[in-house]
Image (tube, rainbow, N blue to C red; front, side, top):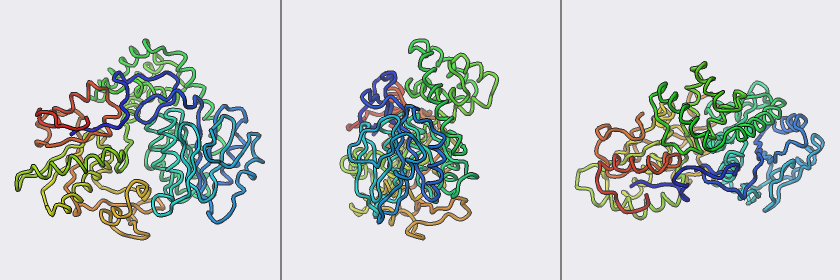
Length: 482
């Protein structure tokens, strides 16, 4: 069975020009049309905040939200302290407070915060499940709410908070800045984000405002210079060059997704129109590979869409287990698996269902992706402790090895943080492999179900129709959401 994230984007993949978009590409014209800059920091963050706002003009046209690790038992005076460093109003965030340009909002102590339709939403922090990762939580909500207008910045701090949030912002087409670890008082958080590969720019704090302004100006110029019609034809030429160099065809990706990501690469090099970028690609072969990796949208998480995974567990997977002949393996294909979270999520569900039914069936999950680096991560099965935001404490205890504070430390890992390692002996066999999204049927053993939820977000409807018959061995499409 093939699933997709709801609500579905338009068939053409085109969206309202200039509107904010969610991670799936859906347009939200009612949301802000100005950059919303979320800045996360922990230990050493105050000094970095002060440096940033001393260098940031008060009339940038951007809105700023600060997510700092604060002592939950003390009243914060962070807003008062930072007011000395900027002419912009600095206020403590309040419930349903709309984000406005040229204003600074500071998270209050003992609270988690997200953004919903351009307004801040607060809740009492929960330390039992993911509450210790407030930066990740806010960044992820910002990516979903504001799309390409989201900007995430990770400053000084220990641990890994912010890394998964930057991943979401990167996937939504936003900008990700990270403080140069050499300039940070504590390098843990910046180093984690850089190592994960989600830093668009690595800069000293005082250089970030200038880079933000340059990026915003260039993106406005790009939008002005490219009409929908001419941009489509020019994008096609870029994709032809990309296919010739890499062997991969991105023509079935949504045009809006392609446009945002190519615009991001153009802004990186100060180019304001696609013909100039075509010329740059011709003269710089390394940029072709950089664009290829930019288009590999490795944005995923465990149980990414709870509604879909709940439907699978209640209505689909039990039937697949029951229909299986004794001794026959159940094979499932997860296409576009990125770093493997979706495949391991399915494995956990199947293990739980098999225990409930007192079964021990042979299950094989084939997870494929064209990104060799992402597949390598999936094969190892190591994930940061931030996954506690998406994985229940019970599942963490059962399916991930225990270690310090319930999570293991990866030997030899340079990050100052614990990692979770998926237990291979506690569930179905997961086989990550590098493979095209629409492979030849012979490339995979005969599968009974398919779950390309992550890849589906970036594909146009025509490509989705090609995936389903291959996934199911050209059999009749099963009932359920597609």
